[in-house]
Image (cartoon, rainbow, N blue to C red; front, top):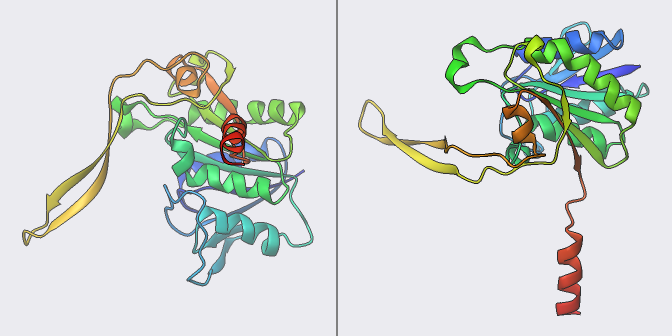
Length: 253
């Protein structure tokens, strides 16, 4: 099996090294094509106004000056041209990608691009305990990652579906199983602008996220992580809402 790896945290991110170790438990044929720098939050963007720069930093390890989506396209259409991979893995992201994170995540977008190009694709993210960010742990993802991937592949990934996997912020032995989950929703998520001043008194701004206390709905990715389970969520690339489609057709045609 040939596996293409990528991420959105950059070619030198520790999570990518974790993903490579996970992938090598499954196959010896592993190729990495990842962004030159951190591309977190770029979603499914393409570089259309700037040229892509590609450099091989070591055998089978390539850095692209571009987005995660650029990297998958570069990997499939150039680096591996004539030698198509059997699987695309994206991650392991530093921090969970659940609920509305899905629409922002470059990690998930890379897996979406793999799916669009006809290759089964899985995004992997490691949740972090907000009270312990200074001591980020990758061991849950590393310990259980290859097992989850094998089980997903054995079940099969349908065309047009990307698999989103999130590992809870617990020690590997404290993980409480795998939950096949729906995409959740944070009912008190707050998005704000944090205004500050530089040394000359000029204003500058950060996009700020504040999380209120929530009770995640049972069966969601949020609920799975909150209860120490690995969340596995199949995401459909076709975003059409069929009930609304029917209502609009009745109203407008």
